[in-house]
Each structure stands twice: as C-alpha cells, then as structure tokens.
Image (cartoon, rainbow, N blue to C red; front, side, top):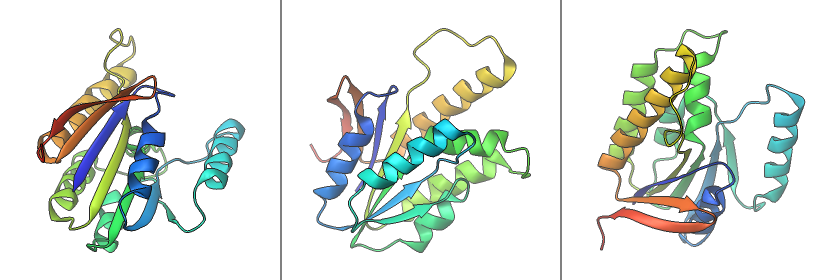
Length: 174
C-alpha cells in the first residue's frame, strides 16, 4: 500500500499520517526530512521527536529518501515520510551539496514502485495560491506540483486534508 497525504500548513495531514501508520499493524519507521536551519526549526524538530511514539524507529534523512526506502523495504514495515516539501527544499537549495534533483526524484519514484510494505508520504500543497514573484519560489512551486502529480499517478491512495478533515481523492481499493 502506497499513499500520499497532502494539505496546507497545520491542516492535520501529519496527524492523519501518524494515525494511519499506528493503525497499520506494521513496524513504523518515521523518516524525517527536516533540518534545523534556525532555532525555531530546531524547536519544532525537538517537539516532533517528543510527540512520536517511543516504539517507532526514527530515521532523519534530508536528501537520500530512495536509499532509506530501499533499506527498510520489508512487508512488515510502514514507512511514514514527513515531509516531501522539506525534502524538495533540501534537494533544490542545499548550497553545500551538488544534488541532481531529477535523479533524486526518479530514484524516489522507482523506490515507491519497488516497496512491498506500507508507505505514507506527507507533503504540503503549495500550488493553490498566487504565482510567486521570485524565480526560486516559482521553481519550488512548479517542482512541488510536478512531484505531487507524479506520485499521485503511481500510489494507491491520495488524501487531501483541510481543517483536519480528510478528503480521499483516489483510492484504488474502493
């Protein structure tokens, strides 16, 4: 089972993903993509660490998602990846690394096809507002939208969350 959960900031998407992972009956492996670039983000990361169930294995990986997915590719695993937009930011804008975004994206898509357990991907929907003014912002919105479209085409389930209310957009099992 592969699924994508989309929503705006503070929409309830991560809460839904965590509940879904908890109810999967599988060993949950939480893959966190955030990096602490400032004090406020460091506090958010610390708060999220405290809020997660202690039995969940946590893997912090800002770039190499496909590698981590392959490492934990087992039928008894539920991978919860939170979040793809932070991963995209890391891939596009890390000044210390020479990252080929198209290769990272394709590797992720390939790893989803090969995964035999349950995988839940969480991402922010950022393309519903006005067109950003700057080139970098426009590229981020474009790449995010294209990433979501590619993932939505190949996963089993897509859910959009607004105000804590999930709306199932796609479910191949229905």
